[in-house]
Image 1: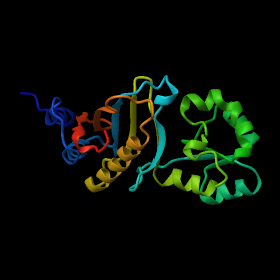
Image 2: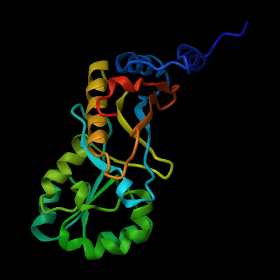
Image 3: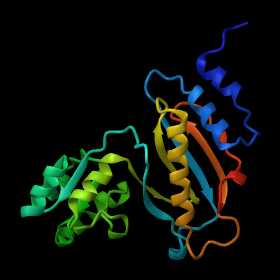
Image 4: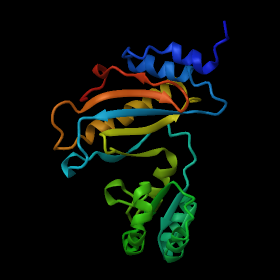
Length: 231
């Protein structure tokens, strides 16, 4: 009989029909992350919303207490003292019209965009470029602000943005497989708390319909919703 690969063993270790408690689910995901790189641990949710309606949009940010394990590159649109402040806070790219022209030329080497309010006239010209990539600054997400130090620090220290997609799906990374189980659980709970707090007024019936966790290359593990307060 042919020897099972690590991936095949991982697939057989998870019962696809079973709903696991949070602790067991995260333990399974961690033990089945066998790739040669440090896999991202991801959460996927099916929500009972239709994001085509404004009152059913789910979008927000959450500061993961144990960080993401990722290096986040941040671009800031600012001038003068605020540009200096952004650089001092650790922003990777800082500029104004020159940064706009760089982006229009096809160079996007960052993961988050922050802007001071006075720069939104410039940033607005990039809507068709940044919008589809989920990079457009938004005051509700804290990425249009005069407090660029806090915005840059938050972005680099474990802040995760989430947004529901067309089919009512939200997915986000909550850490790395190298994290301890306790750290992953803490991040998971912080993420789920943020989702529940962002339940829109137009959501009717059951809010969280399905929930699973997985690693980048590992099998999905279904999570029992009974453990999720407010789901």
